[in-house]
Length: 126
Ligand SMILES: Nc1nc2c([nH]c(=O)n2[C@@H]2O[C@H](COP(=O)(O)OP(=O)(O)OP(=O)(O)O)[C@@H](O)[C@H]2O)c(=O)[nH]1
Ligand SMILES: [Mg+2]
Image (cartoon, rainbow, N blue to C red; front, side):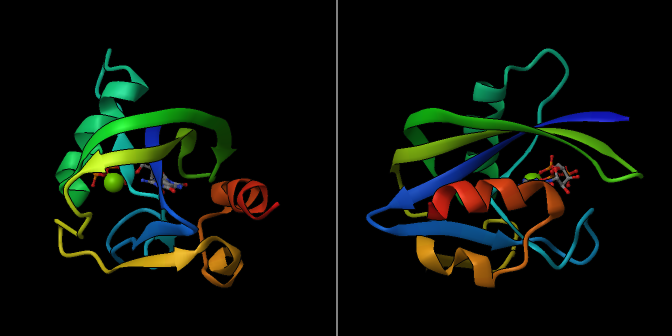
């Protein structure tokens, strides 16, 4: 099963907004860049806007493509499109009750992310 996902690296100054995946979710208990699955025929850019509105309550107004990562978790194959989100309306929150944090980019390595995110974290701290 191949799942296309859009995720936002929401940045403000030197901080990044991350969220904790619920234990009931795939890769639960790990931190993520908020986002979710693209609907059939939906572009990743549209999915990014929709998911960040649903999960974080923000309206994205400026973003740029960062990187696509394909990863096989065994139970699930994902193609993650990461975007850097540089401007947005509203203050991001965990709209679905998820724990969230604004963390300095340099502190990202001390948070546990899903395997597919390791390369992204490495790129961000470069
Ligand atoms: N949102 C998000 N998903 C990620 C990241 N890294 C990563 O491997 N994933 C994987 O991407 C897949 C899709 O994400 P999701 O569970 O957020 O999808 P969704 O918001 O549509 O959730 P839902 O299935 O509860 O409706 C999951 O299998 C998840 O483990 C990440 O940084 N952010
Ligand atoms: Mg999600």
